Image (cartoon, rainbow, N blue to C red; front, side, top):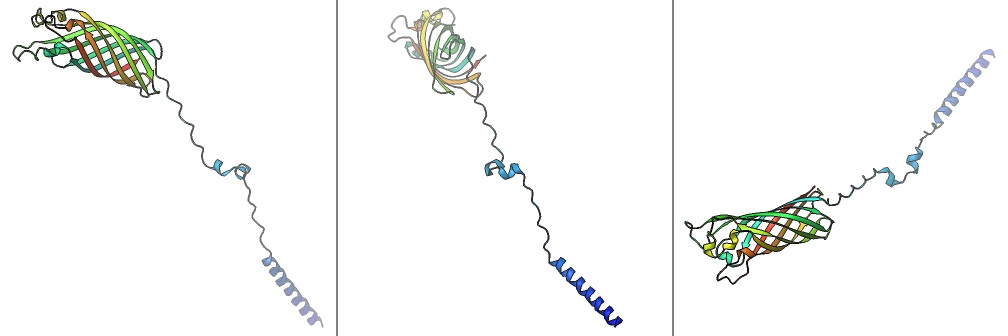
Length: 234
């Protein structure tokens, strides 16, 4: 009897151990807990991507003040003097001040080199400079932030630097001394990002009274110039 009781208790203990292991194996593991950042969970999809950098500030407006301008181009004689001298290289320098965004005053100097080769042969032709100075007013219309159109009016004096009577014997004695010149100019300017600089193209005309033929001349002493320009505003 004692052996049977011990055997029965041993079997019961083994059955209880097997049942407890099966129950532990079948119990599901606890679910993993995911913690969300409130800032991320509440953000919209647009906030997840990096924000675009702010736009660059607009460039500063064109500077106004003391102006130096240099032009390089050609001077063409349209009156009777075209039978004396050919088209010549021409240099013109302005020094002025912009009183308003649309109005400026300026003084100028100019220099050109030509000769009497249209009338005389290579051995007899005389090479000489023509120089002058004067002043005027400029009115500018700004079509945009980068483009301006301008109109100038000027008055000055002009002279051909030749040996005495070299032009007088050809009928242009008045060109050997300073004489009045009245003209104007039309052009446009382009303003780059650097608000001190401006680049332009222009064409001008003038009535140079001293370059009229004194004896048998029939045409007015007109001159035409065309040039490219660069200017700097301090």
